[in-house]
Image (cartoon, rainbow, N blue to C red):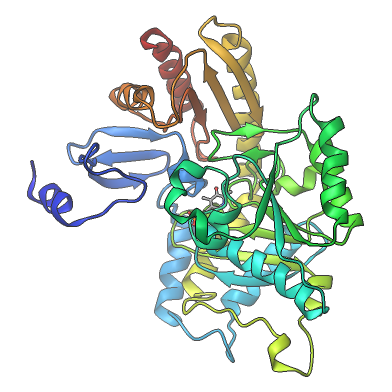
Length: 422
Ligand SMILES: *Cc1c(COP(=O)(O)O)cnc(C)c1O
């Protein structure tokens, strides 16, 4: 084993890892475009864009050049009392593509904090208006992050076990579908009418960590309408779905009822540096304006609106809006559709689904979320030069927009071949 890996094993604690069962990590030396390179220079196609971040390709020169220039000029400055052009220019670009009710941007560092901020905004919104609303409503199987607020509204509870006693008060509802919406809608309405729910938090259309579970816009829209009628704040967690992945810039655009608050991170900066934004409409913001200090929002992170992060985000949005990226999104969508037609009736496939460039397959086998199958499949795909992260019996593709037709074909072929090892 090379020295550096030995040191990793001895001193590094990796996220979401049971080190006793899974002590090994693969050392990645380099990344370019849709490819990752390990120590032996083996190539892997990054089929999940490193958790949906590097959508414009790893080390995209358009982004890295702009950031390199910015770094020479203004690296960081406190964002309380000061402001700067990278933040202002990013705001202009982002507000021009966000759903049209979004009015104010609040900066933080990662998806989890963007959700915690949204929840705190919702609680304080009601508090400032003299109402005590202590409850949150969220979907079963949702995932919103690992800090306390975000973890509380997440539903993947076997991993929350040690913390459940410390979580916020959250009521969970199933994701709507054709069969349950008739019962769910009236039940949801009853919850909303009680007057104790501060906010409804949801991943619009696609639940990423639940292995790309999908629901229909008309059903979600119905729930959003009910929340809105009852003064409950709607929080769209678009940390995963944001920036073009569902076929529109934001998943929220597929519905008529726009969210009050939107959480953004992951591909916001094209994967180069961490940053998150919580955006909100004017109604939310106005509830914090007062001559009293304490009605303001007293939440702030040291690296808020870091100028280099803002620069990376602005460059990413410019790429997203370019004709080239928009064409590639169309290419990936139709390519997935064709592959789906070919494979969906295979006896070892239980279910397939697609939303924009997100494509998922459930295999016809029984297994746990972190059961043995996913490790077997993971190793199989890696041996074919493809990085995919199966969850339970689901494998999904969420590749960078810049992936080539040829690279996509390689992923499809690896998935087809993997049917033989099930
Ligand atoms: C990844 C993710 C988060 C958490 O983001 P981090 O940056 O990992 O804290 C929150 N919500 C959704 C929908 C996500 O996919």
